[in-house]
Image (cartoon, rainbow, N blue to C red; front, side):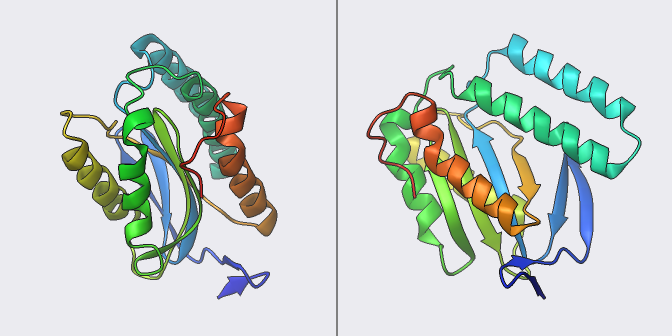
Length: 192
């Protein structure tokens, strides 16, 4: 069932913990996903962000409050990622990641927007009924790590959010498309 002729209605949402983040998984849903290189954040910044997130989550009384806290955490994380910490392997290997994202587009999922940054990737993707977000992410990360062949390159965790409204969808797609420019990257080619 669709809401506003576009956004799937989230009938059943499952909460999962993979590592330290809570993930909301739903069948036939649109997700905003960010995954990053293992060295994309200095450890002290990663620890500070996680500690603040965990402190705030302890104060949350409802799942809605948890969602707001996790969204704020994601925004802070993105600001730090845009500073270009780490090896930024994707400056050289961005096409490999872009090709992996596009490979099953229209078959296993529908990409609505995507951007490969120097040290992280943003994707707005509709996973159709029966598709599995962790399996999809594993596929992208495993394939690209193998082709890039620089050892362990991806952070295990990733950030995801179910898109619930047309406005949220439009804002997220715009954020993804503008991310390179906002991070000071000119004529960045890995955006779609």
